[in-house]
Amino acid sequence: MRPIFRFLAQGFERAESFDPASAKVAEIAEKAVPRGPVREFLAGTWLGHPLHPVLTDVPIGAWVAAGFLDMFGGKDSRPAARKLIGLGALAAVPTALAGLADWLDTDEAEVKRVGLAHAAGNVGAVALYLLSWRARRKGHQIRGVALATMAGGTMVGTAYLGGHMSFAQGVGVDETTFEEGPKTWKALDVTPDRLTDGKKMRANVGQVRLLDARPAPAV
Image (cartoon, rainbow, N blue to C red; front, side, top):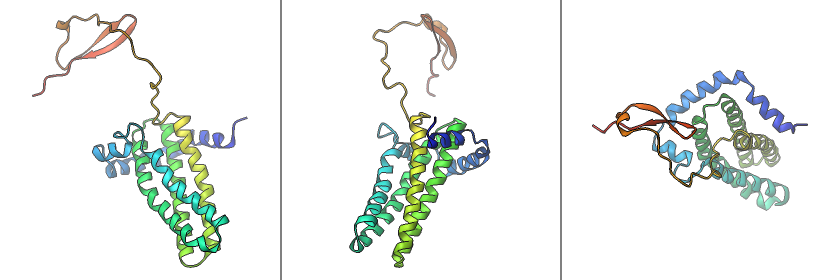
């Protein structure tokens, strides 16, 4: 029997009705975060692996800490809980941008669909946390705690979808990490005179078929 969350995640994978919205979001996001240094930074190129999972610890940690203060901290901890909720909402902005960069770099429709559901759920969770922060600021503590509890439940579901994208769909995972490269070099059965600048050609290394090319000289 499949876990309930896995069943829901696979349902999102098959939700072709998400495709028009996904395409529209991608079109807008491509303009907001075009290919270049900023997008590479958000994708974690400089870090060696995706930046998004690292950043998620900040908002999630702040919101979970606020929840513990709500449950066990008493009245004196209310200002701290409100500040933690605000901190989490602020930290969610760069976290979302990093996730958006990863989402834009994926081509599989199934991944795009789950990513769209993940993002929509996170937007809803952040909105609920902001409402909770506002209610607390006006002195409506019970309403603020209720809204934060709803947001936390939403966050659990969206966190699962994020994990599904990484561990079930392989987004951002280096699938060659544990593969060893060849210990010896083998020559291509191609003579140098057959290679033309800027042209591609087929070649073989034993039984392995390759596509070889020599780049055209810079002008």
